Image (cartoon, rainbow, N blue to C red; front, side, top):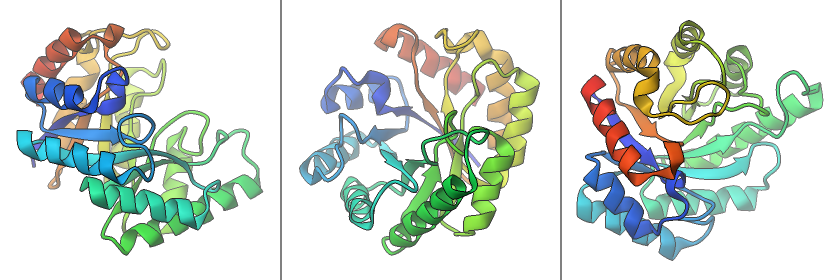
Length: 250
């Protein structure tokens, strides 16, 4: 199946919605994940409809609604608002975060709260045919593979999936092992080039990672998103270069 390329809108928080659409279109990308902090705030239905219409005009898909909901820390009303926003946006999934502490620091209560929170998110979203996808991120319970898989299995919801992105300073081989372990539940990969630590580089600087990642995604029988994020210097011209490289590897 084809890998669908796209852009995470918060890559360019400084740009208006219209400009983000223009940038993605000009770079030849196919989809946008709209962030819930600036471009499509939670509950701002006119903003959601505007982003959707602008994407439709350019033939761009909506990859996800990138919320900042923290499972275990949101009430049912916030969940309903997120789902309503995603519906207006035309997003097939809502990205959420797995709590507020990392696996090593989490107690039994933390894990139980996040697990219950994810189950509630998935249940409410399922009523609108929407998927819940966990951000794979440090300082949450998806900061490593085993914890992420445990959450997925404990919740057991068919509409709960996960993202993946390369953890800081993890080498190529370990990244590919993580990707393989999460593949049964994987919906989206955030694509960027950091090395060492969080130093932003052109995407081509980690071609040794991204070529095999994209080859593996392409081998799956379903569509998986590969969304560019964290562009060096927050540069539109760098995005254009990174998108060209991404497309050459897909």
